[in-house]
Length: 313
Image (tube, rainbow, N blue to C red):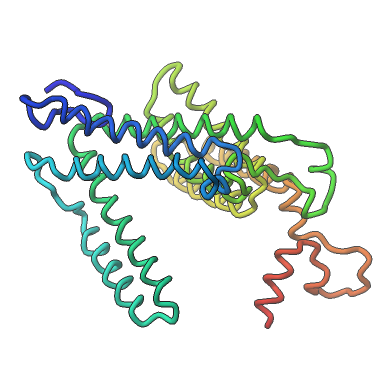
């Protein structure tokens, strides 16, 4: 059968192709609206602003209609995920519902249980849709990477770096880029989640497409660094170390070259990590203090100091 559109490869009924076309475009438009909403400046706060809230709510309504249309394709058997994941999802759902009944805040617990169950439903619908054709995974993969590239461009174009960001040890004036999502930790987490997708997509390309993918990886890493999120930087370092360990123990490569490349990459990661002033402020010591032993008061990072005081109590 020939491909009908981006989201499906076979019409549900040859006699009514318009019904299949409408169902497919519901998903296309809904996904595009949802991905493009993140490009708005300070989109996190715009989610509750008028009329911007209609943007993402309309996207979810379209995706809901597409989900109903997808689940109504009775000619395609709705199969479980497999790999013993269905039992794990069932256990988590039962656990979420049972714990919400005895929770101290019942209404909040019920909402979280409904949210978790909704995620499970979406997971099954997406897996069912991806099994309709082999190239759907590749197209969805490309759409996520392309959307991430646009987000990185918007983020860096909205960023206004100054020399004070690198020279100061002040937590509040150090490097930080909250655009476009509205918070630097959101931007860092988004880049960290997208980095392995972009890296894996690049490895599957050939020729100029691979070079283009390498540029996308560099753009992703630069946006992650500029976000100033220490959690995202730590996650990137941990992921990089895992990749290096897998590379070192790969039997096909030469041992000497592997260790040289691993050493250079480790040095690059450490230099990049410590060059960020927000990371340096985490362990900076107040020189005015006369105490010779370690003390929480000597930590200049306000949020870290607050967390340590809470842990101490």
